[in-house]
Image 1 (cartoon, rainbow, N blue to C red):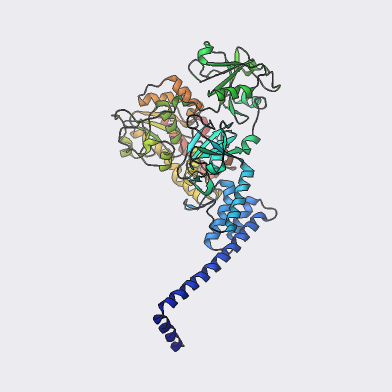
Image 2 (cartoon, rainbow, N blue to C red):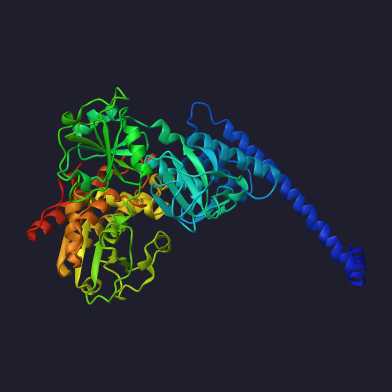
Length: 583
């Protein structure tokens, strides 16, 4: 045997070319075997996904079965990502919170492309229907509702999800990273070849092109469309809550005719066959955010001090049927039915850095998950100045928070986001807006952010695993000490409750802007009211369907609530809102 091995070595030492040829053949054979096993593995995944265990819901049956397949690690991860994507979007995060794989990243081969195509078609059938490629113009947008950008992780599903949540009928993607929403397409159709840019967060999928939109009609928004009369009873019970109309407008209520009608609502048109849709369409076409129906007249305009929409009237005063729609109310010449269209109010969208460096450092302090990012959005719209941050978050910078890259001591931003609660860090600021939120809601919001991003959701595996109990054990005490420390060490602290900001944004935002030392027109604050959600509201389509808090967790958190309530009242401040004690 040794003699034979010696001859083998001497043969290849004399003939190195033969050795390398033999090596190439060996590696090629191994690769073919590996690819064949992968093909068989993918086939098993697709077949078993189509036939979940009898008597068990598909979403429960998929994961355990895939975990038992005898596949290599790469193929096992691919199977999990495929099943998860239809419920939680294209990104699947492992237990360590890191991105493991994404939809479309299956590997090569015709079977992979076919499997990917099937999944995409299934998603489109469930959520949306592709309409086509459309021309877009920065001066006259094809979709004129809200918009948001993400130059790292934009996906088709994410864009659809956000537009559907806000009641829009259409979602469009452009430049691979921009998402636009709207209730009607106001542009011409172009060749499919012009939509040629890959989505930044979803390889293999198209997200429009240069000034070209890949447009989808949202099935969920269409199915959930409701007319005004069908929601009137709910509005009477909860008058502060806006109601969607056919996915294209938001019902604001019944209001008395403004004193100076031509100044308050500058566009007026007579409509003998009046309907809500006709008036909303007219005001949308004229690019006004408000549509007011007054019998046979349609008025369009902006919310201003002449027509602020802060004093609702009894809806019965507006209960005059539309001439063209038997089940809709069109108001009267004295009492107007008002809807907010999907036209973006641009009067408060301009933002810039402070013209001169500020001599004071003002903190926007909060426990994580208490709405700090949303509050920054409101402050930037209200003041026209960028906010800064004690940290750096690239995803927020990509969403338009340009002050994110400035050092927090630069003095160029109106206030600085911080979650710090140490004495040294607190005393570094000259004043602070302290934002406090219900700990039950704040803890869940921060857990979702930690595992799902700023507008995403943690997977059920995280809620049911060890991550959630450990998170509550570590973060619940911090919720209390954060407030206690800022009350103790902070200078000139303005306390704002997140719940009060949501319910009475105009007044609470006015208080916050007052501390910042900026004079703001009331019209600008009214503009902020109509743009209050921005891009930072989590979608309601995938909310948790059960209470994750155990009895022991509730007992502990309730004790912390009492501590904070006592500390606030000890400083002659309003205690925590009543809904902090729901359990």
